[in-house]
Image 1: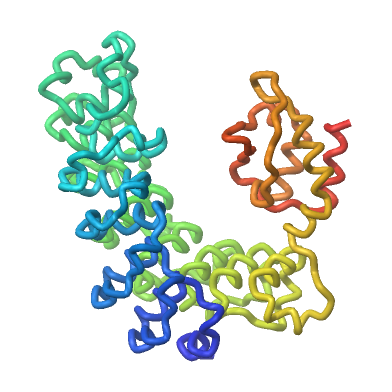
Image 2 (image 1 turned 90 degrees about the vertical axis):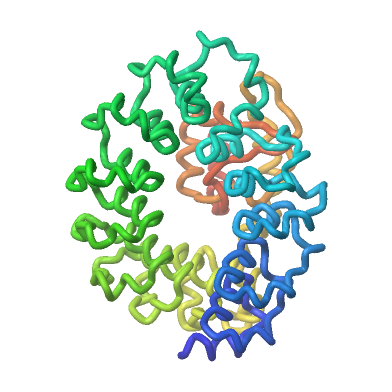
Amino acid sequence: MDIIQHFSNNLDKITGANWVQLIQANDALADKCDWSKLDGGDWSKLLKTHPQFKANIPFEELSDWDWGRLLPDFPEYAALCPADKRTDWADFIAAHPDHPALKDFDFSKIEGWGWDDLLKKQPKLLEKYPDFYDICEQDILPHGWALRVAAFPERFADRCPWEKLNNTNWVQILSFQPQFADKCDFSKFDGRNWAALLSERPEFAEQCPFEIFDGNDWETLLSNHPGFADQCDWSKVMTHNWSMLLHLYPEWAEKYNCPFEQFSSWDWAELLDHCPRFAGKCDLTKLDGDELYLIFSNQPTLVQIDLLKNLTSRLGDFLEEYPEYQEYIGEKVPSWNDKLIENAEYVKDFILRITFRNGEVKQINIKPYIFRNPKVFQQMIDNSNIISQLQYDSGEVFWNDLMGIEAHTLYNMKNITE
């Protein structure tokens, strides 16, 4: 079925990301768009190719996260951002450090992870970092020296302990201060270091031994500088690298002979999640429930009714998002949320028995999304050492990469709660 026609017949199922893909393929369909479904990231992608739709942005409805995704590419809207939503601005500041909107910006609003990404791109903002002037020079770690030399070479280069710097530190410095290249021992660089450096400073390419690159290194470099594609040894590019690169450069599939026949089922899931145009090359019957769920939930125009039961344990989640398909299934299938609610008291009892690092047991607000992969979760409950690594924050437990839990796993938790 033609994907544009499929979109036009299922407007109620289209997400913001879907609308962007749809309009970029056929802007005549913009008249049918529900603009409220687009978040900041969606608007940024759309306006890059179709700036004529900027008048449709519902600025008053954008969240702080939305503003954070929109402003890096469209700084002209910064003045319209309310003061109470200027919290997720790290990417915007990194891209436009001299923007007038930052004149009175409170840098204390930037959280730790935001500083990490910000300083990699704008090391001169190190002076805005809390306690920058309170650190004694003898306590500065190599990473700190790299940031200081990258930002203020005239103040710190003469005192920098060059011999203590590792390859990552050198990439940080040379990305901003290439004049120190004569102090760097490039023979210690691996492909990952070279890919990171060339992503910022492609002029070092003449010194780069590209033969040491693996597929991941090529993915990193080409994602930032597609001009190196003709120098790439495509035999080293693995299928998972291809699935990522085709998100950015779908035309490369034909130009560089993408080996679709070698794709794993997960490669297909990752590709079709973002690039539904390649669906005709994939045999969806070979994908498992998790992979089909990823595709169908994010690209509902690719849903095939006869494959819904192949979603197995994820079918309930899909039907919760798209209840209009319930009629094709018959009896109701419980979702993860249903299973958690059904076993809420047991889960709560389990959580309350966890002793955190400080030795205290605190009341936890259970969130259904704190679980993800039941296999990983099972490994966690089989290893009590991992339990001690859980982090407590603002009354909730956050376990990265753990979302979704099978019913039988809930009962297996008795192993460590009794």
